[in-house]
Length: 306
Image 1 (tube, rainbow, N blue to C red):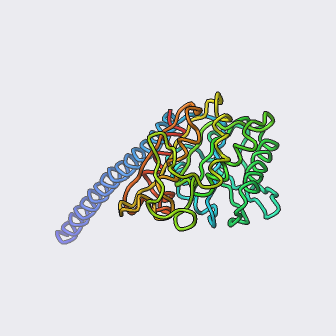
Image 2 (tube, rainbow, N blue to C red):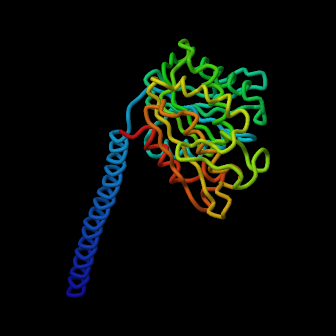
């Protein structure tokens, strides 16, 4: 009987200890779950705060921004800059405009009727087209397609390398056409306005004065000087970005700083504002400029920051 009582007490103690352990596990587990939930909620709150901050930081405009690559480029040339804008909360509406060799425009993707700060990545099938008048017409075709589908009134433009020269030709040819959307802001990256090294310019051969006037004007620069009149009174803001490798060539390796900076003389005092941004070192190389996070930030601030 005493043995049975001892066994009973042992069982009670065992059950008591097991119960205490189970309660402890439940309590500890509850604290762990609470902590995880709090961390998740905090992370979610931070994400929401960042999203709201980004939304408040940028303008809420329905004006689209067109990105155009340079000679032998593609939409991939614009990808980094566009993704930077998307990641920072500028927009979530991005489409591509493919231009065939015949100039036909096909839009890939779509944005909603109330899209904020939409972006259009232009890709030319014939990306080695050297006739600037043809390129200018293709830019017009993109704009009229967007105008027909989305009824756009204004647009921003970001160009790299020869894309800027093509756009300058567009403005010279169509910039005064009242039936077309109006240019709002323009970003030029490594513009080839007065030549390309080892094509029609030698290293350190041409210089520009304080007004951007080149010591020698290469075609089609003289012909483009009429765009000064076209920009006058249209309240256009211009950002001109160029790179200097700091290797003594005063260039980004392909385009001289004098060629890029000669845009200032082309436009004169006609833009509402004009600013130059110089980048230096290996990341300022011609093709690296459109992969440069500082350049992307400069563009984002200029185009969309309040």
